[in-house]
Image (cartoon, chains in turn cyan, green):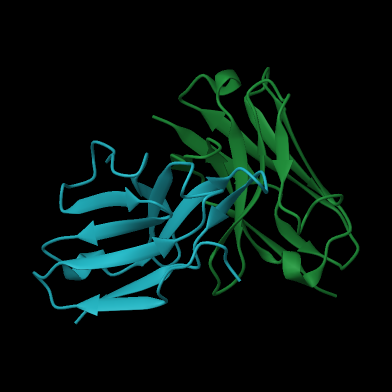
Length: 110
Length: 116
Protein backbone atom coordinates (compact mmCIF):
# COMPACT_ATOMS: atom_id res chain seq x y z
CA UNK A 1 0.00 0.00 0.00
CA UNK A 2 1.50 3.29 -1.14
CA UNK A 3 1.71 6.28 1.19
CA UNK A 4 1.07 8.55 -1.81
CA UNK A 5 -2.42 7.92 -3.13
CA UNK A 6 -3.29 8.03 -6.83
CA UNK A 7 -6.40 6.84 -8.67
CA UNK A 8 -5.71 3.45 -10.28
CA UNK A 9 -7.01 4.62 -13.64
CA UNK A 10 -8.29 7.66 -15.50
CA UNK A 11 -9.65 8.04 -19.01
CA UNK A 12 -10.70 10.78 -21.38
CA UNK A 13 -11.36 11.28 -25.05
CA UNK A 14 -8.54 12.38 -27.34
CA UNK A 15 -8.24 16.14 -27.35
CA UNK A 16 -9.67 16.52 -23.86
CA UNK A 17 -7.82 17.42 -20.67
CA UNK A 18 -7.26 14.89 -17.92
CA UNK A 19 -5.91 15.32 -14.41
CA UNK A 20 -4.27 12.79 -12.09
CA UNK A 21 -4.22 13.47 -8.38
CA UNK A 22 -1.62 12.48 -5.81
CA UNK A 23 -2.40 12.77 -2.12
CA UNK A 24 0.15 12.61 0.66
CA UNK A 25 0.90 14.16 4.01
CA UNK A 26 2.84 16.97 5.65
CA UNK A 27 5.99 14.87 5.91
CA UNK A 28 6.20 14.23 2.18
CA UNK A 29 4.26 16.32 -0.37
CA UNK A 30 3.53 19.01 2.20
CA UNK A 31 7.23 19.69 2.79
CA UNK A 32 9.02 18.48 -0.34
CA UNK A 33 8.96 18.74 -4.11
CA UNK A 34 6.81 16.42 -6.20
CA UNK A 35 7.95 14.71 -9.38
CA UNK A 36 5.86 12.90 -11.98
CA UNK A 37 7.03 10.01 -14.17
CA UNK A 38 5.59 8.45 -17.32
CA UNK A 39 6.13 4.78 -18.08
CA UNK A 40 5.20 2.87 -21.22
CA UNK A 41 4.95 -0.93 -21.02
CA UNK A 42 8.32 -2.63 -21.04
CA UNK A 43 10.31 0.58 -20.79
CA UNK A 44 11.95 2.60 -18.04
CA UNK A 45 10.10 5.53 -16.49
CA UNK A 46 10.83 9.05 -17.65
CA UNK A 47 10.50 12.27 -15.67
CA UNK A 48 7.65 14.52 -16.87
CA UNK A 49 7.46 17.10 -14.10
CA UNK A 50 9.89 17.99 -11.31
CA UNK A 51 9.93 20.54 -8.49
CA UNK A 52 6.10 20.44 -8.52
CA UNK A 53 5.58 22.14 -11.88
CA UNK A 54 8.83 22.34 -13.91
CA UNK A 55 9.19 20.44 -17.19
CA UNK A 56 12.37 19.05 -18.74
CA UNK A 57 13.01 20.85 -22.02
CA UNK A 58 11.91 17.90 -24.13
CA UNK A 59 8.50 17.57 -22.46
CA UNK A 60 5.69 19.40 -24.31
CA UNK A 61 3.75 22.08 -22.47
CA UNK A 62 0.60 19.93 -22.73
CA UNK A 63 1.90 18.42 -19.50
CA UNK A 64 1.59 20.52 -16.35
CA UNK A 65 2.03 20.05 -12.63
CA UNK A 66 0.76 21.79 -9.54
CA UNK A 67 0.84 21.36 -5.78
CA UNK A 68 -1.41 22.59 -3.01
CA UNK A 69 -0.81 21.63 0.59
CA UNK A 70 -0.39 17.88 0.78
CA UNK A 71 -1.70 17.11 -2.70
CA UNK A 72 -0.33 17.39 -6.21
CA UNK A 73 -1.91 17.19 -9.63
CA UNK A 74 -0.63 16.24 -13.06
CA UNK A 75 -2.54 17.74 -15.98
CA UNK A 76 -2.43 16.55 -19.57
CA UNK A 77 -4.12 18.79 -22.13
CA UNK A 78 -5.00 17.88 -25.69
CA UNK A 79 -4.89 14.17 -24.83
CA UNK A 80 -3.34 11.96 -27.50
CA UNK A 81 -3.51 8.20 -27.89
CA UNK A 82 0.26 8.21 -27.55
CA UNK A 83 -0.14 9.47 -23.98
CA UNK A 84 -1.60 6.13 -22.90
CA UNK A 85 0.83 5.00 -20.21
CA UNK A 86 1.26 4.61 -16.47
CA UNK A 87 1.92 7.76 -14.45
CA UNK A 88 3.56 7.92 -11.02
CA UNK A 89 3.97 10.74 -8.53
CA UNK A 90 6.96 10.75 -6.20
CA UNK A 91 8.16 12.77 -3.23
CA UNK A 92 10.69 12.48 -0.43
CA UNK A 93 9.39 11.77 3.07
CA UNK A 94 11.25 13.58 5.86
CA UNK A 95 9.88 11.38 8.67
CA UNK A 96 10.66 8.04 7.03
CA UNK A 97 13.81 9.25 5.18
CA UNK A 98 12.68 7.43 2.05
CA UNK A 99 11.45 8.35 -1.39
CA UNK A 100 7.79 7.50 -1.92
CA UNK A 101 5.98 6.65 -5.12
CA UNK A 102 2.27 6.70 -5.66
CA UNK A 103 0.67 3.44 -6.68
CA UNK A 104 0.48 4.58 -10.29
CA UNK A 105 -2.37 5.63 -12.58
CA UNK A 106 -3.12 3.97 -15.89
CA UNK A 107 -4.23 6.54 -18.46
CA UNK A 108 -6.54 5.47 -21.27
CA UNK A 109 -7.51 7.61 -24.23
CA UNK A 110 -11.03 6.48 -25.09
CA UNK B 1 24.23 12.26 -22.94
CA UNK B 2 23.59 10.57 -19.62
CA UNK B 3 23.80 6.78 -19.81
CA UNK B 4 23.14 4.29 -17.03
CA UNK B 5 23.79 0.63 -17.77
CA UNK B 6 22.77 -1.97 -15.20
CA UNK B 7 24.13 -5.50 -15.04
CA UNK B 8 24.23 -8.43 -12.67
CA UNK B 9 20.62 -9.54 -12.67
CA UNK B 10 19.56 -13.14 -13.04
CA UNK B 11 17.95 -16.13 -11.37
CA UNK B 12 18.86 -16.81 -7.75
CA UNK B 13 17.47 -19.17 -5.13
CA UNK B 14 15.72 -17.87 -2.01
CA UNK B 15 18.30 -16.99 0.61
CA UNK B 16 20.93 -16.35 -2.04
CA UNK B 17 22.90 -13.24 -2.94
CA UNK B 18 23.40 -11.10 -6.01
CA UNK B 19 25.31 -7.91 -6.75
CA UNK B 20 23.98 -5.41 -9.24
CA UNK B 21 26.20 -2.86 -10.95
CA UNK B 22 25.38 0.34 -12.79
CA UNK B 23 27.95 1.93 -15.08
CA UNK B 24 27.34 5.65 -15.44
CA UNK B 25 28.56 8.04 -18.12
CA UNK B 26 27.79 11.45 -19.56
CA UNK B 27 27.83 13.41 -16.30
CA UNK B 28 30.09 14.09 -13.32
CA UNK B 29 29.19 10.96 -11.40
CA UNK B 30 30.84 11.89 -8.10
CA UNK B 31 28.71 14.95 -7.40
CA UNK B 32 25.29 13.33 -7.82
CA UNK B 33 23.30 11.14 -5.50
CA UNK B 34 22.25 7.85 -7.04
CA UNK B 35 19.36 5.52 -6.31
CA UNK B 36 17.94 2.09 -7.02
CA UNK B 37 14.24 1.68 -7.79
CA UNK B 38 12.54 -1.65 -8.45
CA UNK B 39 9.34 -2.81 -10.08
CA UNK B 40 7.85 -6.22 -9.42
CA UNK B 41 6.09 -7.86 -12.38
CA UNK B 42 2.83 -6.06 -13.08
CA UNK B 43 3.28 -3.76 -10.09
CA UNK B 44 4.21 -0.15 -9.43
CA UNK B 45 7.53 1.50 -8.72
CA UNK B 46 9.23 1.00 -5.36
CA UNK B 47 12.21 3.06 -4.23
CA UNK B 48 14.91 0.80 -2.74
CA UNK B 49 17.91 2.88 -1.68
CA UNK B 50 19.87 6.09 -2.26
CA UNK B 51 23.48 7.13 -1.71
CA UNK B 52 24.92 10.64 -1.76
CA UNK B 53 27.78 11.61 -4.04
CA UNK B 54 30.37 11.19 -1.30
CA UNK B 55 28.61 8.15 0.22
CA UNK B 56 28.10 9.94 3.56
CA UNK B 57 24.30 9.76 3.37
CA UNK B 58 22.65 6.40 2.67
CA UNK B 59 18.98 5.51 2.98
CA UNK B 60 17.08 2.25 2.57
CA UNK B 61 13.48 1.18 2.27
CA UNK B 62 12.33 -0.81 5.28
CA UNK B 63 11.65 -3.78 3.01
CA UNK B 64 15.37 -4.19 2.25
CA UNK B 65 17.08 -2.69 5.31
CA UNK B 66 19.62 -5.09 6.78
CA UNK B 67 19.68 -7.25 3.63
CA UNK B 68 20.73 -4.86 0.85
CA UNK B 69 23.78 -2.59 0.74
CA UNK B 70 24.19 0.30 -1.67
CA UNK B 71 27.66 1.56 -2.53
CA UNK B 72 29.51 3.45 -5.21
CA UNK B 73 33.01 3.71 -6.64
CA UNK B 74 33.48 7.24 -7.94
CA UNK B 75 36.82 6.31 -9.53
CA UNK B 76 34.97 3.81 -11.72
CA UNK B 77 31.71 5.80 -12.16
CA UNK B 78 29.85 2.76 -10.91
CA UNK B 79 26.95 2.22 -8.51
CA UNK B 80 26.36 -1.09 -6.78
CA UNK B 81 23.60 -2.91 -4.92
CA UNK B 82 24.62 -5.93 -2.89
CA UNK B 83 21.53 -8.03 -2.22
CA UNK B 84 21.67 -10.77 0.43
CA UNK B 85 19.07 -13.09 1.94
CA UNK B 86 16.94 -12.69 -1.16
CA UNK B 87 13.23 -13.49 -1.00
CA UNK B 88 10.56 -14.18 -3.58
CA UNK B 89 9.16 -10.71 -3.07
CA UNK B 90 12.47 -9.23 -4.21
CA UNK B 91 11.72 -10.46 -7.74
CA UNK B 92 11.63 -7.32 -9.87
CA UNK B 93 13.27 -5.23 -12.52
CA UNK B 94 15.87 -3.09 -10.77
CA UNK B 95 16.51 0.37 -12.19
CA UNK B 96 19.58 2.49 -11.54
CA UNK B 97 18.62 6.16 -11.35
CA UNK B 98 20.48 9.46 -11.12
CA UNK B 99 19.38 11.58 -8.19
CA UNK B 100 17.75 11.15 -4.82
CA UNK B 101 14.52 13.12 -4.67
CA UNK B 102 14.34 13.88 -8.38
CA UNK B 103 15.20 10.76 -10.39
CA UNK B 104 16.02 12.46 -13.67
CA UNK B 105 17.70 9.65 -15.57
CA UNK B 106 16.98 5.92 -15.53
CA UNK B 107 18.78 2.88 -16.83
CA UNK B 108 17.00 0.21 -18.84
CA UNK B 109 16.75 -2.07 -15.80
CA UNK B 110 17.99 -5.52 -14.93
CA UNK B 111 15.69 -8.39 -13.97
CA UNK B 112 16.23 -10.23 -10.70
CA UNK B 113 14.24 -13.44 -10.24
CA UNK B 114 14.25 -15.16 -6.87
CA UNK B 115 12.93 -18.68 -7.21
CA UNK B 116 13.83 -22.26 -6.44
